[in-house]
Length: 194
Image (cartoon, rainbow, N blue to C red; front, top):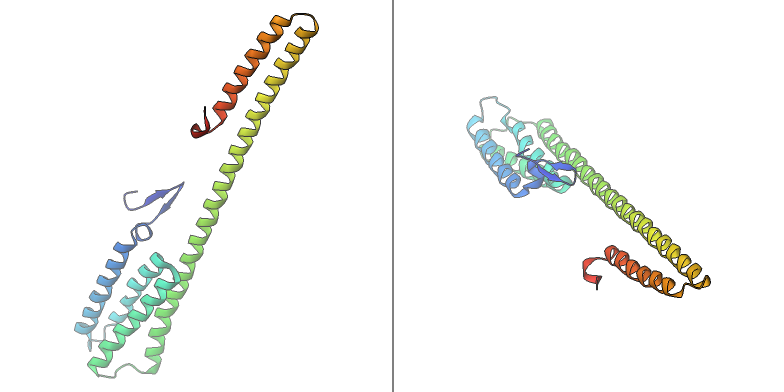
């Protein structure tokens, strides 16, 4: 898992955990495809379809916004090279097909990425809530145990006092106070401990 980051039971692919690197790679891909488009121009090669690679990387890394920006950059670079060449071998249908394909890729993949991130955030929030509920239940169980222990000792001290064993009753009460303080201190966070 060298290319993925572990996050609370889940993993993020490298392009989500290292978005700056993904942005740099997307820029390099745009430059490479543009250079390939310039040099392959007129050869009948459809190099411009490779603009989908950096667009997909941006959409997967940054969501819908990244997909839209990537599509706009890809179409702009394609248009600049085509208009600078001036050959005019692409008709309106070709322009529309390329633009629609690149924008759809950016929008659909970007939207899916946003939904995945939203789902992961909801899952992490639910997991955090479950942990808090489990901690609350644990603390309540410990509080009941303390209460039960103290009540038992108080009942024993009362019984001893009623039977005339006052000294034993006082010893039980002192022991109960000490035990109760210790048990409560163990439940408190460190900053609240005496």
